Amino acid sequence: MSDQDKRVAAEAAVKYVKNGMTLGLGSGSTVNWMLQCLSERINEGLQVRGIPSSKKTEKLARELGIPLVDFSTTTHIDLAIDGADEIDGALNLVKGGGGSLVREKVVDACADELIIIADSSKVVSQLGTFPLPVEVLPFGYEVTMKNIERLGGIPVLRRKDKEVFVSDNGNYILDCQFGKIEDALGLHGKLIQLVGVVETGIFAGMVEKVIVARNGQIELTERG
Ligand SMILES: O=C(CO)[C@H](O)[C@H](O)COP(=O)(O)O
Image (tube, rainbow, N blue to C red):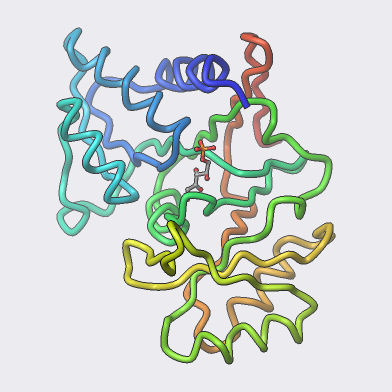
């Protein structure tokens, strides 16, 4: 993991931002670098507006003077820029390490284009080393855990500072180990059908570009 590479990837992504765009603002430390780069361009005269995918992103964007727009007043996003926890060769992702997967998916899914930025530690040959975050309703979450176990997963209730982690939506996150994931969309399909599951951290078929920085050099992969 390298902060330098996160910044390099973030800078490369911001070059795709054009005047007048409505932007989906992802979440996480790599996106935080992107917000810094974006605010520098805004200070130089770029006019954009952002839709944040988490309370943390909203707070930082406000501090950096990035104009925000209420999601309820627009359904069109030109470009979303987000991070990831794992990226495979088919540009499928595992996301949600920061616990913002639901809002990220809502924002990313309605963008004309989604660019993922990451340092090279996020690139994997197969998804599944990073436990899959699954957002669930707190009500009856123990039953949901058992149902996830029946699908072959080992769910762990996420905690932060010894307290149960609560998402921006008031839900819990189960970090689920499934071993290597052969069929990302298939696994998502099974999980999302379980009562109590709100969303999974599998983002499949959503990404147009992945910008990975490795030792300061950019590697761009585009959906074929
Ligand atoms: O999905 C996410 C948050 O829910 C983040 O995009 C993901 O965890 C990557 O974060 P970072 O850039 O800090 O490694």
